[in-house]
Amino acid sequence: EVQLVESGGGLAQAGGSLRLSCAASGFRFDDTAIAWYRQAPGKEREGVSCFSSSDGSTWYDDSVKGRFTISTDNAKNTMYLQMNTLKPEDTAIYYCAVDLPAIDGCSYYMEDGAGFGMDYWGKGSPVTVSS
Image (cartoon, rainbow, N blue to C red; front, side):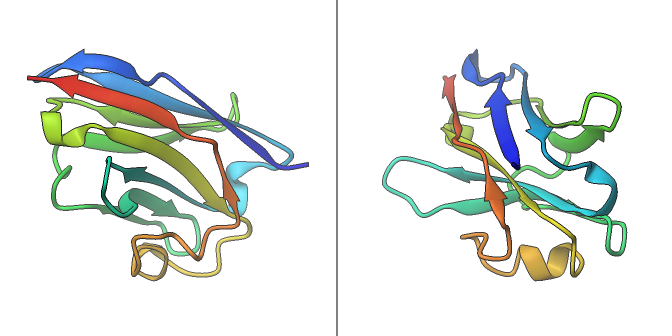
């Protein structure tokens, strides 16, 4: 059974950092597309970052470029989102998601913010950034 369990969210001050973790079980990251999405109160879900093993592509939303980094630790079977220089507008519930196997690059998966290309989702981890 595929499961994704997020951790690491919480409260941070503007300018601070948090690292979200998403522990995976039931599969390995060898042939996957992984992504992080977020949904702020009253807003639609949007894509934050993606990595696809299909073509080795990495994608970041313009609002997080240079501040957020997506990565995996295959030994721990965990994916991460390192978030630096946090801003109040980063406040949202963050979701990890996986497509197994990866069928295309990140341009496919990030074409829509809702993440319809993703097969498996975590339950979400709230992040609140205070000014």
